[in-house]
Image (cartoon, rainbow, N blue to C red; front, side, top):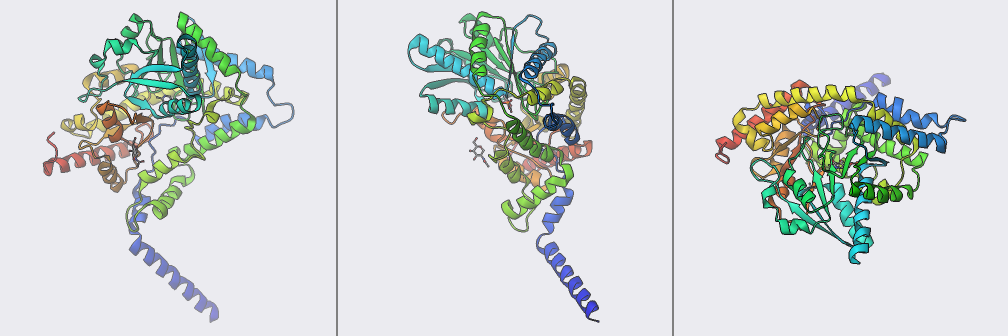
Amino acid sequence: MEAIGTFIGIAASTVAVLLWLLTFHKRFFISIVRTEKVAAYGVYTEWGEACRTHFWYLIKALFPGNSPSTQDRLTLERQVQETFHQQFGSDQGGNVLIAHSCRSIFYYVIRYFLSNAKEVQGRRTIRICLPSLHFGSFYRIIRGIEKSLDCCIELYEVDLNEKDWTLDQDSVDEEEFKKCDLLMCQHLFGLPLNQDRLVKLARKYDIPIMEDCVQSGSLFGKYRGYAESDIIMYSGGLDKTPPCFGGGFGFFRNTPRGTEIYEHCNSLHNALPLDTWQGRFMTCFSIMVHLMIAKDSFGFNSLMGLVSYVWLTERGDYINWYAISLKVRKAKAITPFQHTESGFLRRPSAYQLQSMLYGLSRKERLKEVAQHEFRSRELLLSTIPPKYHRALFPWMTAGVLEQYKEMQGVSEFSWVVSPIGDRMHLCQFLNDHFIVVMINTTWEANEKSKSAVGKCVNDNLIYLPNINEATDELIVRVGKALTMYCQDLEKTGEVKF
Ligand SMILES: Cc1ncc(COP(=O)(O)O)c(C=O)c1O
Ligand SMILES: *[C@@H]1O[C@H](CO)[C@@H](O)[C@H](O)[C@H]1NC(C)=O
């Protein structure tokens, strides 16, 4: 009798709790069930693959007699250099520097110019010409160096054109440009950004050129950088191609400046401490957290959704996915995107070099991704009436679409922009249509900049679920939601398309 009473009591309270949950938190459940938890990062590896490779290299070394020797490490380093040479196709020769990350190489190069300036002019002031949309970590590294080294790094920014986000090269003042110590070419949207005039001017005034090819469409795509560049960089980060769980590849051409800069960078590099087993393990661990989010391994993102609901969402509303994305992205403890110097100023360990070799061998897989990406972009665009394309994807001109096809690159991200300059409004709209978006990633505008367009682009860019990770069904759903958004704007007369 008593047992039955207890049973009824438990059942009744369970039902009461469920009813309460469903009444007051219905939207939480709807959100959890209906949202496809596809992240903004394109991550071209899997959980199992990462365990079999990057983690295995670490675990293997724990068995007696298996720990890689100094000689093993040197051999690995040479192998990585040679493989990079092959993949990059640098038959004209040049030096390759294999670093902990691309940020390391950037840091060495800046240090070279600073010490050069001190020798030549007696004070540490350098001036860099670059597009007005900065890679966030590089920008913060520059600001960090300025603080810690008592020097001045001036930026001569070239803004974007408002219409199609190409570089406004006509605005460059030759007299101003002449005073620069370095031209830093940057690529923005997964394909080469035309910087021809800047490159020509740099050659005319004998200014060294460094090209950051990380977002130019992958090492395995067709683009190989400007023939005039003295330095070309690629990253082997989690969401980069080659996917190596971290790594920086610097190619220094056999030009007089290329060689000179290489030698300086290489000696800075060689003076750094070697990354330890523990250091590499911690890096792999934090990357793994991001991999689990990107792939929604073990339903991990439902847990993130719950955290977001409890912590970052108004009671009774849909889960705020973009707020949790931002929190995770910025969390200092697990970010693989460190810009504090201690995070990247170490020489790669043997384990990391093994990972790099593995990442560099993934060309065939990445070719498939490139083809998939091209089809997915077509699918996305085909679900949105052409009259809205310009407002949502201003950079996707006919020429750019052609280039996407020709270059066979892989983009890290899939973006959209707010047609009314109100990014949060569109974020909320997409969130309420069960689409996970993200903001404030990768790009950064200079707070002191006069470049209005770069700043506006930076402040209005939204990262969609990556089209390489999304199913066709989700891509269609994203397309339809964006269409609805534009139709609403059109109806209220806010925008004429
Ligand atoms: C444009 C660009 N440059 C450089 C990097 C830096 O790569 P790493 O993480 O290897 O330092 C990134 C990484 O996000 C990037 O997007
Ligand atoms: C995003 O970054 C911009 C500046 O780049 C900043 O003004 C804004 O507050 C950031 N938004 C969030 C939600 O962090």
